[in-house]
Image (cartoon, rainbow, N blue to C red; front, side, top):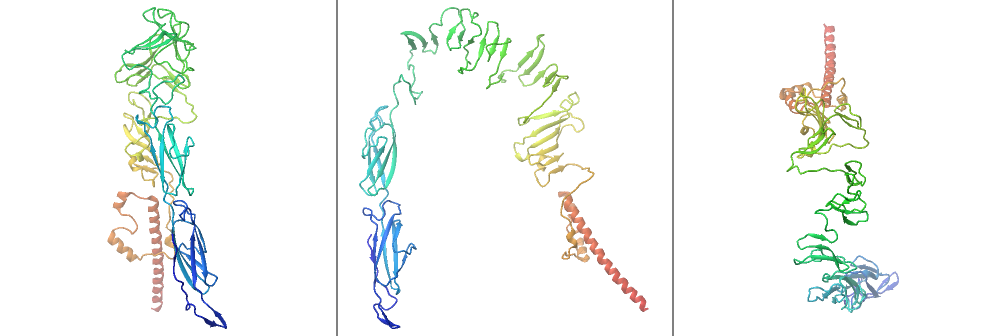
Length: 555
């Protein structure tokens, strides 16, 4: 932290007296004194801070003075400094200079060391709910002495006691006001008892009501047994036994559980029997059995032998295990025992008679649809078959599907295809195809529709009354700066290549096809070049004709 001084330098001869324009000037030695800031023995208060300062005192020399510090500052004194080396050069009006240097110091970073007491049971608290934890804290770095503040508890010692389980944090401040923070978590054993006021954060694997041996678990009120869970898992409810060999259990609107009057057929009017699927939702009506021999699901006033009333959350689901069941999954019959609607285990559905959806049926199936929003056929192979369903065309005439190509998503799109046994084309795919990029193919496999430069691809001829192609044109041939090759150059190129320059060869056309717009432009280009050649030939013809006329007149 000491100051190192260097001898003064002077551009003129030191202490040399000279006379200039009648004035006598004397050069004086410069003396520099650097006084740094002091924070209890350090020049910076905290590790990493920038609050140091250097006070420079200059004696001797001739004012004004200039200052050049090693950190490019040009003032006399420095503030807001970090720890490190600093050097200054001071020059007076006579170009006499002096140098000084200093190193500012800072304390080491504050570190906190926590020693947490552990009881023989391996926890920091002896038992659940107690507050007997202890921590011993020590600190290094910074400037001692240190002050401590603990939370929770607001203790201010480095050895806090009577701490509770959970997060404990400490703030440490040194003699310069530098602060750091640390925290730890004190552990405690789980509760080994149940509270009558309720329990929280329990572990059902090890905390439960029950037995760990082969004894029954009994619940009593008024010192009389009311409910028993046997060691074999059977449940016995006192007050519900006796009577017939079997009884129905009911729950009334208040939640009371009781059995029927005997024999299982004298139950009260429309009560809900307790079933394994009974809901714990008090607002939800479930299965009701009524003395009218009617069953209500979701309603306690059934209007038919089976009355199902779905709630706002659930509809009607009829399911079966298709791996073991191969018969009829669902069948609806008329009063005359004729099958009207049947779903087989394989998923095939049969509807006998005329069926109408949104309309009175006039044929086997009449559908009248009016939708607002989206209608979707979902599934990786969802499709529609259109056309007559008869012996010759059992699958219709056309199919429409979304072609979900799993291996290559770029091939996905809407596919119009001919089903098996359809007329004319028979089984044929990709009659018309629209891929996800908006490209259309007619009779073209989707793998050939990935070039977005071509929106329409047709495997076959195209008939049209008009075709308009927007492309560039060849008027540049008539520009004054256009380079028209000589006929000799054209002849040479044809002789070497067998085709006009700029026109693709027959092999290229066979391989790549013809760009109609580009080819039309090239043809017009050649036509316009031919026109220029004809104009030149006409000029040559007129010149030769004039020469011939001159020769005739001479003779």
